[in-house]
Image (cartoon, rainbow, N blue to C red; front, side):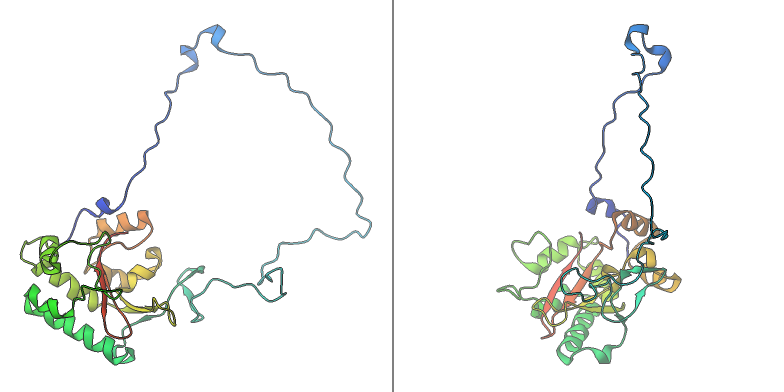
Length: 247
């Protein structure tokens, strides 16, 4: 099991609201307690007659039309016909472990990233990192300056880069999801936790998650509302899109 980052709270900003001090009634002077306002009771009008004697309509529970075309409005879902465990209103993408289902360029890049991680040498990642253009590999949500390998070294808790390589390997050995299919943002994303509501994870999936984070981190992320630890993405053409953490 890899070293854990215990400070996921650093990713989550807490907003505290200051409350005005409360006083007991015994602390208020007599003149400070205003008499209750006089309440006027206005009688309600009699109910309108229901000539058809029809029962009140019940709220609709089936698919609703869109109000324009008469066609059913879009319902929550992921296009797979599957709903989140325990909550049919939360769309969950299809989670896969099938490496053979990956396009060959994606499968090849994943294998190269894992091989580089197992080598223990950050420099082994350099040939896979793109630094220019729209397909540059994102290594920080805020962008980086200088050498990308040196950035990864500084992000590694051990100062040498082995921790960050271990995280990358374990991320890529988790299940993945295929998102934004058919768009310019299409991506194969590891681990799937980033795209799945954390409170829907079953016991087996939580074991997978705890290979990456602690139980305390898990609770923090549930309170935040999303998985915010490291994730990585590979484009259909095999280019390494990102390896980032945060919200």
